[in-house]
Length: 99
Image 1 (cartoon, helix red, strand yellow):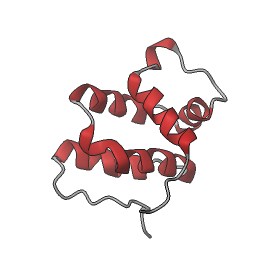
Image 2: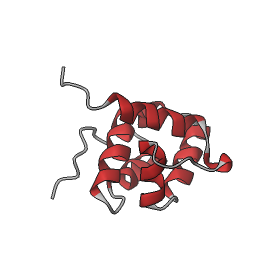
Image 3: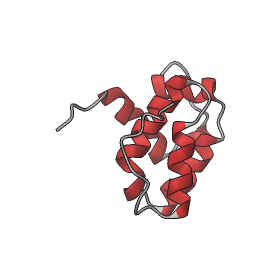
Image 4: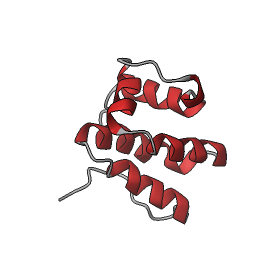
């Protein structure tokens, strides 16, 4: 079974490799695609603070996080972050055509 990732973990530090893997192995396929595509595009450039925020997002149950990203639910104040905003914006922009 393929993960769907288009990014190699080569050149990433251990923390980023683990987060990339976790983003592609959420539990429901929709979240794999949402978080995995985002991680493929952004993981190498995330700051330490953004990596912390991503780790916190990965602890949120799939259905809850899915609702936040799709705009069906408003995230609680303590869950709102710059990274969540980036993730939502990335998801709304949709798939990018291959270059």
